[in-house]
Length: 347
Image 1 (cartoon, helix red, strand yellow):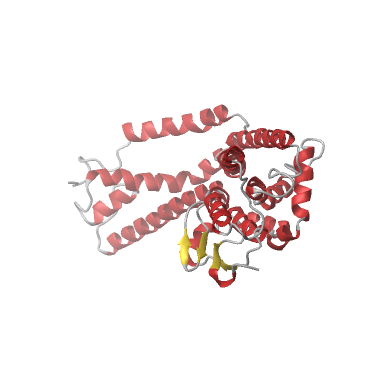
Image 2 (spheres, one colour):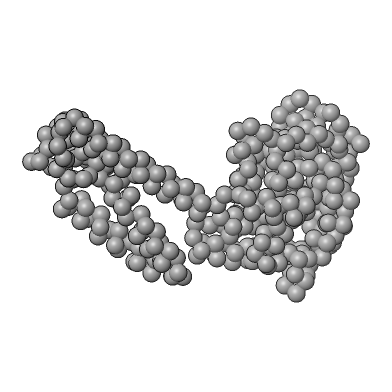
């Protein structure tokens, strides 16, 4: 088998774009060494949306030279750099070659982005839109395969478009397993794509590199989502606010130890100014009091958030959650003076 030590593929095992390049190498009859990406880049690639959407994460090394670009450009490079190794992936006819590139771009620009939106959308509505776009894109590909009237998009044998779409099969099935749906494997809806996927899976060269669906499901279940990221930010703010309360309590204790009496009120800014006059500019009082407000109101805001999640309509969610927040913010900024010039000696 050609290739050998001259070819290395560096990337994440779960990336469909890495799988595409591996499929192209195997179908061309080329041997290569796979190197799992580690370190900071490996951590970045360990994000579901990056693995699916970013097609530039993998690196192909040929003869010590790094071949950059997207997974699509790497497949084309492999086909052109090894013309005598295995069957050609891209058609010889210029018009057919242009059409193959069109469908490959359609898969990445339409289907992959729709899958990304369906899995990692910011809201339930956005995810629903993504699922609808996936259905539409799959129907379009079903029609393209019907017009082709061949077992594969490349004709009687696997070609460029088959490799591009085949690299997504593992992730599609992992997502289908989690969501309890069928995207390609339902003969009643997409009979041609279902038969195409069966033929593609049956190829021995594909079976060698195709990842296990169960392993992809386990991997997907451990990946962070947008909601967990937002939750992390909320938790961080809450912890900062709790720390602020602890500091304010310490300042009160320290002030009493120095026989300064009692602070005029209980907010953190007043306690600090009472202990160390002119320690903070006036605007910082609002920041400190805002964090103090977060600490006290977090349980109520959490219950409100849980209540709002029960509404399916995004408009109702905005009204129920947004209006009270706007009113409270307006009241806080307009009427509430945490430590005014008349009560404390502030710059």
